[in-house]
Structures are given as structure tokens and as C-alpha cells.
Amino acid sequence: INDLITIAYTATSISILARFLFLFLLYKNKSVNKLSLLFSIMNMCSSSMWIYYSVSINDMALIIRSSSDLILFTVSSAYIIRNIPRPFRKNNLLEKTTF
Image (cartoon, rainbow, N blue to C red):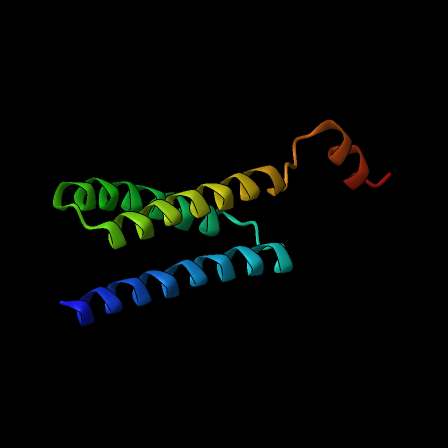
């Protein structure tokens, strides 16, 4: 049983680290496209379902993983939405227009 708990928390740590790397690469590469947003939203839905499941079976490692995923993907989605190009903004439209 102790080996299984170690595996669960190791997997949780790796998953959380992967999400932080996703956030870092998102910020570094300024990759704010519709697919990144769709990926984040789908993962938020999945994480919400995993939270419900893990609370139901009382699995703390899975609760931590799912909760951290939900938080990090929410931050990712907010970053993407905030930085997605808005071509119809008045200022941007004027800047891109050449006369």
C-alpha cells in the first residue's frame, strides 16, 4: 500500500510540474491561439470531473492533482483570453490599416 501511495504522489508531482511547464511555455512563446484555449477549457472540464470522482472515492492524491490542474488551466485560459489578438479593436484596426 505504501508503494502505491508513493506512486500516486509521484504521478501527482509530475502532473503539476507538467502544468507549470505548459504555463511557462505559453508565456514564453506567447502562444495564444484558439487551440490552446480549447485545450485549456477541455482540461478544466476534465479536472472538474476528476475532482468530483476523487472526492467520491476519498483519494487525496487525486484531489490534489485535479485541483491543481483546474487552477493552473484556469490561469492558462485567463492568460490566453487576455492576450488573444483582437482584430476589431479600434486602436488595433487603425494601426494595421495602411493608407
